[in-house]
Length: 98
Image 1 (cartoon, helix red, strand yellow):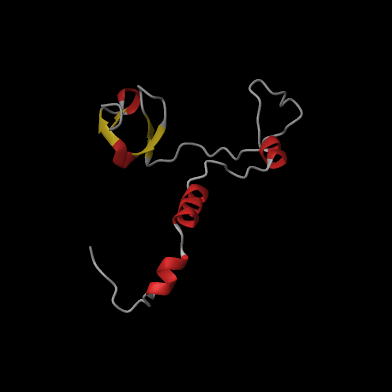
Image 2 (spheres, helix red, strand yellow):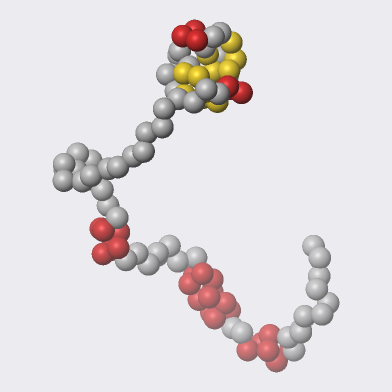
């Protein structure tokens, strides 16, 4: 293990001042399993399954398939032509599905 010789060293008096009980207390505090959790913040970010989202509106811009893209016949995702593994047109397969 590397030793840093530039760090200040404790004198004998300082070493005796730290009792065994103090060291044990520090160790117990450092290993405490308690975590500070803000319950209010946690409740705000909680999403329940089946929540009613009927009042929410989502706007997404849909872009048509480009000339340098193809639709995989297995996963039905649109990929760039560099992901083409085999086939053409309706029989095109991407590298992920190959």
